[in-house]
Each structure stands twice: as structure tokens, then as C-alpha cells.
Length: 77
Image 1 (cartoon, one colour):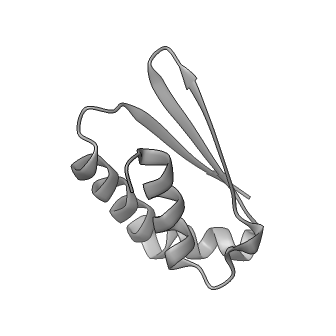
Image 2 (tube, rainbow, N blue to C red):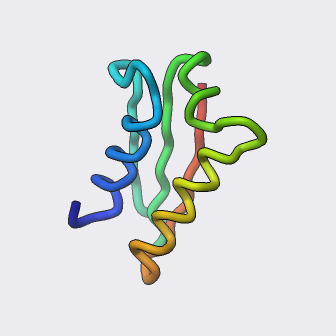
């Protein structure tokens, strides 16, 4: 995986049971890459995890892998 979008796609789809309904949109605003993850409500729960532990872990992995890239990650159901 050479870019942050591919890495995010891989990580999100790896933690859910059914990855067919997941859509990850990205756009750039003022030098910040804005990612929006959209999925069915039951899949959103798997992405966020208990007390947000899964999504926090995904953010940590992205921060360590791409320290110079500024991004925002939103999860919507």
C-alpha cells in the first residue's frame, strides 16, 4: 500500500464481516484530505468498535504510517 487511501480501505474492510456496503469517499480541502466512510448501521458499529477502540486504532496506524499527511476521518451510517 503506497498511499493513505489504499491503506484506509484495506484496514476498514479487514475489520468488518461484510465489506460490500462500505463506501470511502475522499476530497481535499485546504491541504487536508477528508475521508468519509459510509456503510450500513450494523457495519458502522463494527468499524467504530466498543468505546471507539477500532476507529482509534485505525487512526493510530494511519498516523504512524503517514506522519506528514494531514487528514480527517468521518464515519457515517
